[in-house]
Length: 94
Image (cartoon, rainbow, N blue to C red):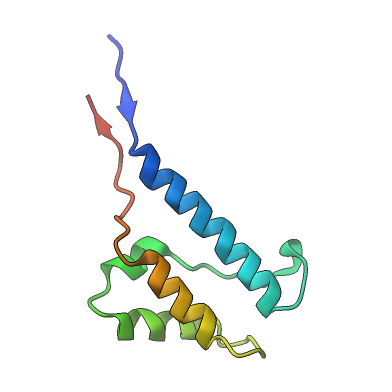
């Protein structure tokens, strides 16, 4: 038998664009090349699980604690971009 796994391609595309945007922003914030960005993990699904933008903002600020540039604009833009996004769940088998 065959099993087909279907992903929500539109949501995956949105997530890919978001991750590319995050990389570009972190490169600018840390004033370095992509390969030199400190080991950071901004987990969009974790942020989506949080109850409020305040909690999300605090979590991202915590992740960026070592950044010497102001991060408020990045955090605000990130929260705006994830608003309305869905968590990427395990694909549904059909």
